[in-house]
Length: 110
Image (cartoon, rainbow, N blue to C red; front, side, top):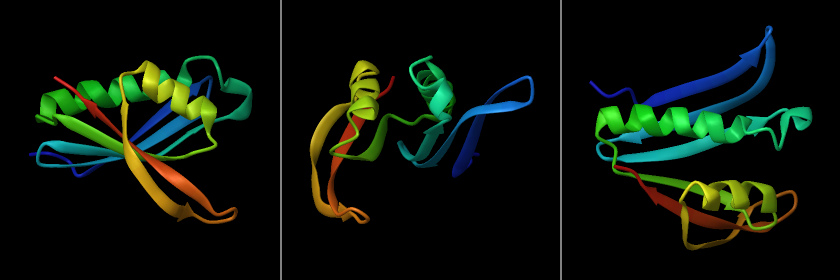
């Protein structure tokens, strides 16, 4: 049975480094939220969390993973693209405070 929601946590010596919240239904997965402590950014924490999720999704039969990211979040976009995500489209004015477009990304996993 496939778990609909998964939470991944990256800790070292009981200190939180990052987390990832995902969902899955049938053959599709979604990245709902990812966060890395500011002092841990650029140290592969986000990538490690995502790779763990990809492995779990492969076991569950997930074939495609989707996410939305702020257009201005260059660091996250670089990470996603490095891991094989491709931009599919734009959701205009998706985010508020400040108002900003969301970019929709997809990754095919096998």
